[in-house]
Length: 445
Ligand code: DSN
Image (cartoon, rainbow, N blue to C red):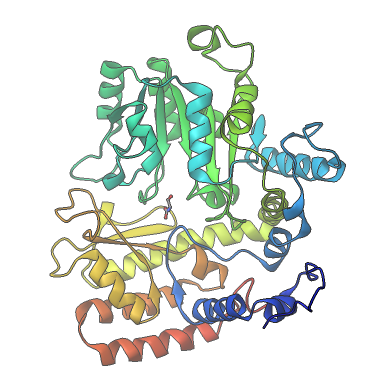
């Protein structure tokens, strides 16, 4: 529908759902379809979740309009008194929730946050140790085709072949031999707890910065369902939209002082906290997305509520229940199970690729992503694994008993990947299961 009257200056409408329908029926229709899809399918992507209506409201608010380049009290635009309060509120909530000395809430997302970490700590060409992508690491932890692999020297550390878990002894030997300037601890497809204390010992032995990437597990840490790396690490980076249930965005926590200032940063007059801030702005980014910072502040307020602790604990219980049920049905899982919110089905011995199975599951209303498994013989574009995660279905209120049901759905699709009638039947059962639960941000709006 075209709302502009002849000769009239178009005014932005008051925001709100009804005005979206009136102004742009095409986008509104896509939104309704996406809502319908999310309401009736099982969101098992380990990195996705349902932000609350309050988080969505803040994210869609007029804070979108404000330019605030700089930091609270030192902006390059006028009229920032209120957003200064807002950004300080988010920073203080973050520091309190994780027990950190310093916090930056401006990174646009996880990869920009990690770029800022590199810029604050290293010079191009320095050595960086990280878990390779096929073994559960992240692109930005030193992958060949990412800036982290082209601008820095990659020193991968691997998994123990038998346990498929990080081999800390071998990691220590590699670190002593290579003496990297930075060691990453964290990943996107690693279903076990990270031993931050051991990593901190190793990093100290070789004068290396230790940086935890907690993008996947920040909500679990806030809930006390995974150890907190803050006291062991120089820097901690994260996205804000995964298990912590915030808006799309990122944040960085750090110590104030750099314990290696005298070794690696003698020429800098700035301490670690200032170098992180300066790396985010002005080095890499311009104006912060104040709407995302507002929504992050809301998510942190929600995460500080005792009910979020139950959410985090239940997420881990649900992932374990799903893992047990799938193991019981004869499936192999990377590392043999899970300690956190995710599990990775190892389908190397199955006839189809991870991608092909993920497509069949999606037809049946089970939304996952295909993923490399350690030692994967297939191409990264198709893989031999499927990653499953419990954060979103736990946000809907599902518990162990529903995980058994979900394992049954997954099993029937994977057993008969070409039976479209069966997929349609499972699709209906999935919709029936979902209908018994509220979907945050959708059912309650
Ligand atoms: N895309 C994220 C994930 O799914 O884990 C990592 O960046």
